Image (tube, rainbow, N blue to C red; front, top):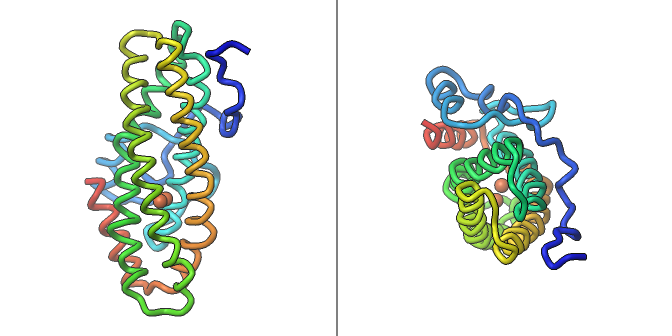
Length: 218
Ligand SMILES: [Fe+2]
Ligand SMILES: [Fe+2]
């Protein structure tokens, strides 16, 4: 195996690279939808999408996009020491843009809209989920740093058409760590935090969260 081999980090690579309509867009209405659609790349996230009546469902939909774009980065990572083709260039550009523009909004949706409302609630069903929130926030900080490094290296690749062996290895290490973080992180949010939040939060609280999510995308 060459020192620049990317073998050993195959986790999301078998996911499809092709993308189509972003289902989050279909949950928006009017001007917010048009603005969101015009500023985001098209994305495939599977058959089911959620409405603003279920803001935690929208966050889960975002997780499917995160997984898909991580898969794109993982696939491109295997090609960084070679001259790029149009497909890998477009896939990398779209994935970098997604993590640069959309992921900070997703993090804010959780840290500024959802998590504080869970912490404010004195509800026994939420206790276990609330204990997980601090670790989730720490994951966000580590992922932010890794995304910044991936963005730096990915942009260098887009500009130069290739990366050095050392830079390509760093890119792949970053992606492998991100995949590891997101696997556990997304599982906890999707299976342990969002379901109980969906049960406990009132319709008014969900509407407030959804309104804040829409405002971040105007
Ligand atoms: Fe999160
Ligand atoms: Fe999340």
